[in-house]
Image: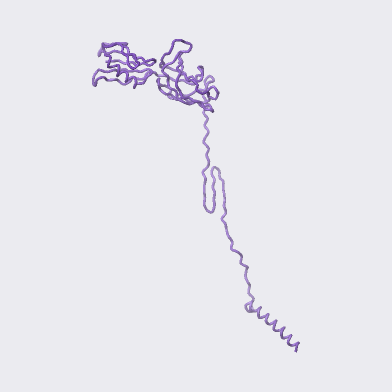
Length: 278
């Protein structure tokens, strides 16, 4: 009895195992469980930096940014003009009347002598002895560039002479800077301004002053002077000498041909105004 019970138990255990295996296999045909699923993959778009000549292009996640090239300013060097070992300037304008402002510029002034503060500037006659000191705003940079303005002076003195002050007259002058032998350029002085406009003392008449010319003064100043003294003098007769605002006016000539007229010369220091009075 014990043997039979043991055999049956073993047989039943085997049969149960076969039933379980059959259920897992879905019947008589075995089925594959398939591939083991993996975690979803993540794709990151690559970031690329490309450097091209004179510009930089950066691409990141589809966006493109282009940086403009960096351009350095061109370096310009002006070669100095040198005459007899002295650097020269250019005057603008090259012709100017007394009292006018002239700009001068030049390079090559690297010696310490040129860069001294408060250096004097003169206009010196090319065909004479006159040295006329001029007001100026000229400066010299550390690199040797000279620039600034000068005002054409009205008078000066002759060097090595006791002749005293005399007016600047028309003609060619050297621009002298820092030392009396240092000519850095040239300027033509035209001292006579005019003829200035006529001055009428009565409308639509011959009562007027013409041929007004000024030396060391402008036409505005000359016109104001002629209006003041013109009422005191006449074409003929009248006073031969008149003073006004520091000016001394003297009759220098008289003509009776055609319309009578007299010529007058007015002087105030180195300044002069001439006119013909009808």
